[in-house]
Image (cartoon, rainbow, N blue to C red; front, side, top):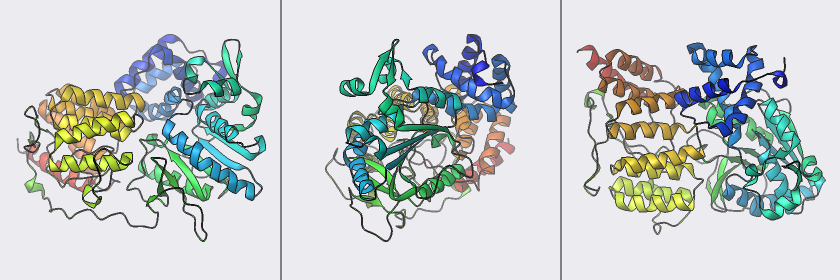
Length: 528
């Protein structure tokens, strides 16, 4: 049985779209059903099923949770674009590729690029276009493109695209690199020959196709968001070993390695941050400022007072913004009074003062965090709006804008910002989590339950999500469901912490602290 032979009825696609909306909050409209069909053709043979309706029925069962998560990366294949994240591609085209090409020519070899998670091919063809526009000869750029989905790889190799999928391609590049054939745009033979496609599973423990220190750059964007933290760390180790010293790793905006113990250094190039394997035992041209090298220790957080279970208040706890917040501020019903966390960015106390609204996106986020910590929410809101407009692709900027609105009690505006983040990254765990918190603020426990459930489907080991879901169950009067969720949070005590994009005061990242709070609430429920 092959994916080509499968017949998939529209009703099965509609049922799958409804299931994805319910479980993951992923909205797939009818014009995205072609992507669903590709995903089913890739996954159904692996399960031994050739009936799409039966496959979807199994996904709805408890035993189908694992298969549904395996399907998600394939479902989102339709989200790829040519030259996606234009600021990253500008840094690649103007700064990084010219240096890589110069260095490779000195060594009489091609630049070797890897598009890991290439989906239907837009990214590797974009890389090849940059190479040709920057003067690389066909034998001077070797672009390897891989994906888990074999059907997507087959379509990518054909290099045939509808006009609506070419919005990121400029008119000169469209004329140079594409031919109009039967109403579709096909890549030219020259461009097609520069890219070779293969199936490849990044989560596999061994990569026999990849030689150590063979790659100059790796694009792996919007892929590792589907992995748990141990898998991410293993993939990062293998990426590191695959890159030459000085080689570059491009990740999606929602895929920061901040506070993860990897060997990469983070480098600012053209206003965006990219990861690089450090050069050891030699001197290379420094393009930009190294923010924090792989060998440097992370800045130590400021000391925090110890928090005991006895000091944790029972829900509904009320944590109001400082006095400078606007009069319409609503209570933050998180129910945890714990040391403040800046998991998604360096501590603002360690940052040098700079004029407001200036600097890189990360530096501007630091300014906003500092304003939030001081209670200057109107200023934080102005800076957040400006950053979201200047960096529309930056997921952390969108989410932080939503958080500032939520802290000020602007629930409708907060939801709008989180939804904008989800339009960019449909499976953002943070956006779902914060949407749930906003729903709690808006006294909508059913919506909060739905959003926390979606966040936990995307990331089952998120201890904070289990704790917040337990709080929702308490507010809805379902003590038994609350106990189950609190126990889930406690069972994750020893699990890895999750660094969340965006800054929200008093949200803990320590699983130990969350488990301690859950134990306190569990004991309180037992006394009722």
